[in-house]
Image (tube, rainbow, N blue to C red; front, side, top):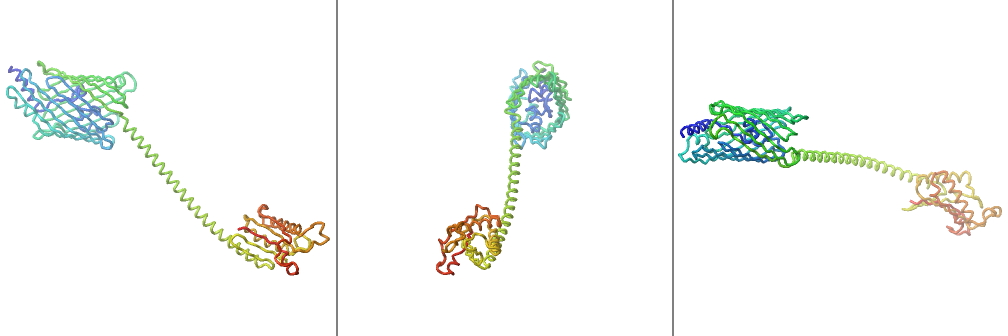
Amino acid sequence: MLRRLGVILALLSGLRAFEDVSFSARTLGLGGDQTAVVDDAFSSLVNPALSAHWKRPVVALSLPYGYIFNSSFIYVQPVTGLGTVGGSLFYRNMTGVNFGDRLTEADGRFFMAIPIGRFFSFGASLGSVSQIYSSESGGYPLARQRFEPGPILSFGGAISIPLGLSAGFSISEMWLERNPLLQGGVSWKSVVKNGLISSYLIAGNVAYRDAIIKFHSGCELFLLKDIIGLKAGFRYGSDTLSGFSPTFGVTIRTHRVEKTDFEIHYGMILDDISYEGLDMVHQLSLAVALGDARKQEKDSIKIAQAERARKLREQNLAREIDQLREELANISEERSALEKERKDIERLRAEALADLGRVNGIRVEEDSVTIRIRLTEQALRFEPGSAEIPFPKGYRTLKRVGDFLSHYPNNNVSINAHTDSSDIPEETQKVFKTNRELSSARADVIKQYLVEVTGISQSRITAKGLGDSEPLKDNETEEGRASNRRVEISVAL
């Protein structure tokens, strides 16, 4: 019994400096705690910066078996734009062999990992340690000194560079009245595209506290497209208690990436303390990666696509606005030009109308819908019984009228020819039997001349002979008959 008591005291004396605690079976198989293994959930308990670049939530549970029972639970949740946050529970139960002495410790931690750029990350964790100690023999003061309760604080940093290299450091277990545990490590992961081996990992870790240095190192091979993993390593401590201990492990996992993945890890350590019940520790871990690892990437792509579409719409809208502004400017210029042209046309029309009104024998009347031009015998005198335009005065008069009508190329024009009530001369009765026929012939010849002179469409000019049906004055006098012999040209506005 005294010999067993001595072993337990020696064990607790060594643990007072610091002990090896493997939070997961995977890192146990790699030789122990690792500060640079970025794809293991429990590594956040060693270095809280490691999970900063994770893409999906992970929940994990670890249950070891041996002379010291350590169980761990952790949950890691990525937060878009921030990094990751998480929490953990750690339980330790140390039982003396055949003594019934028991030390139970539990701690809870909350941690946050923040990415700094693409390759760097920083993290911190804060928690508290609680302790329940009982012993049939009154307990051991050394154990109380090692596992005193109180707040616990940790900091860590990590860097991931191309070619699969990662490095990390941590300052952990910063308890009140205790020296912190300093750790640093590196890892290298390489992917093999062809063959039985799909990837391999080499990791190393150094820990220091109270003038004691411990080394952890191991390698991991994944086979069959990262489904089965084999690992081996060792840990070594400079103190007399630790010595050299080899480690081994096995992993089985899914690798669906876009769906929930499961990982089962088994690890074991062969301790160099060859004493009954104290020569081997086994550990089993289960990790579940929830959801789609590419969700953030897909969401980012969707956001980027939506942003590009929004920018494209904005660019198209800006171009359309510019085009509309340009069109409005052109319309404004065209409107100004049209307004100027309209005013010029109105001015020219007014000038042409005024000039026409000054011709002897032409009378002009104008209202809102019609311009009426009356050609009396003083301006256009046909020979009795004739439908030929008098030369040269008649042509000059109609040329003046045509010049005026050329300012109204799209307006309808009507020509009405009138005669007095005198009989048709005998020498022309074979051509024109009535005054209506004579006036119609005169209207047609005027129409033909104006079409040729003005260029107005023939369909826009109508010609009609009214004979002596609409006299202006009494046909009993020469003066009255002269007034009735006339041509009236109307322009519809």
